Length: 110
Image 1 (spheres, helix red, strand yellow):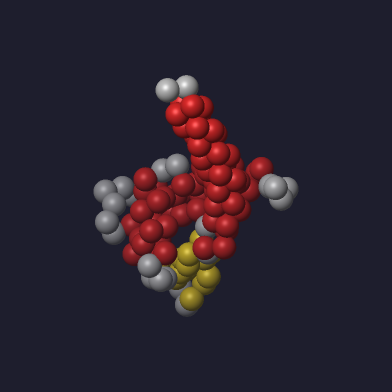
Image 2: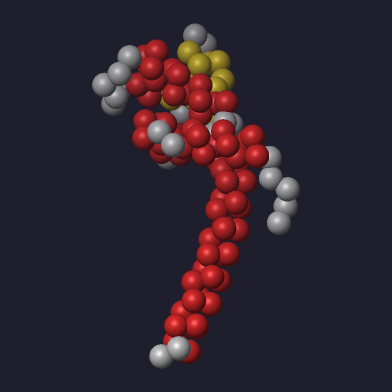
């Protein structure tokens, strides 16, 4: 298994832990590039609260912001999820092997 940047992994999972941040990420993952004001529209919360969620996503590297004119546009950065996916895949393989071994054991004890 490759070495893992635990801090980056923690930031990624922490950022994904909130439904508003997942919704923002999902919207940007569809290829949309949007301002924080645009991203705030569907939520019943202040622009400041949405900005805080955007900052968490940006700090985790899941989105980037670029100044375009007077607005800062947010863009999805899918490569950041790669390390989290690799971590999940490793653990999924481990547990699949454990469950397969349990199934073989149970089948043999019948």
